[in-house]
Image (tube, rainbow, N blue to C red; front, side, top):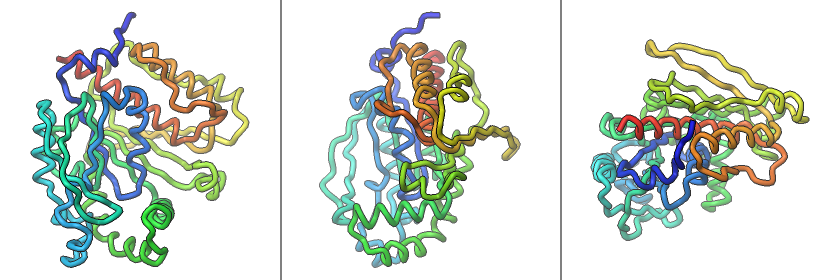
Length: 320
């Protein structure tokens, strides 16, 4: 069956497709939507970071004894209104938070793209935000993995001492449990990240982790849009350790399926998946992992998420 170039279809459509990604600071939220940016390009995909909607700068939060995870430290009402405005295709004046200084820079005019990604601590925190998001994702690394990432990021990228980072982690944890973690139940997909069973050091060495992708059963199936793993490639062309596991469960009366991937797979496996997406959307070339002999579980999950999001976007187009 012939499918038109889906990238051209999106570009010509008036519809603003919105993706919401929630999770703790430094949890890897941007990583798992990078495939969508790469496939459709920066002209069609833009991102708003909810850190820009802090109500208080760094000094203000310290003065009021609030962490950024507390909704009171953020202008949730403004991001709600801005999301509604952007969904109508109307530009906004967006605030800008500068992580280097801990202060606010002058606001900028932000024009909505055809695919709009919202990433932040509170992306799924209110009924209004959830109502205006077409696809939602929660990124949930294990606590020890998250702490390891945050220590490395804040020491290298923000110049914090290890003691400062550890104190901040301890201070933030109650607010994470109270305000951020509950958003998990509202997500269409949840990504869990743990150290690899093949060695904890592989995370720092080659970014190899054990990744779990939990998803609710799709509400809508689009005919002829599928994603198939090449079992021959997995069994015959891989020399590194890997494992694949799938199991189902129920949450709040709904069926959940979880795909758990660990280790590294032959890049040939991912190439087959990329070709499948190309054939069904006519968007090409799709090559997220160029010049790689092996890809990690996180790479594969990123590509599967691309397929899921494209599937959802195709349904919106056909429904309209």
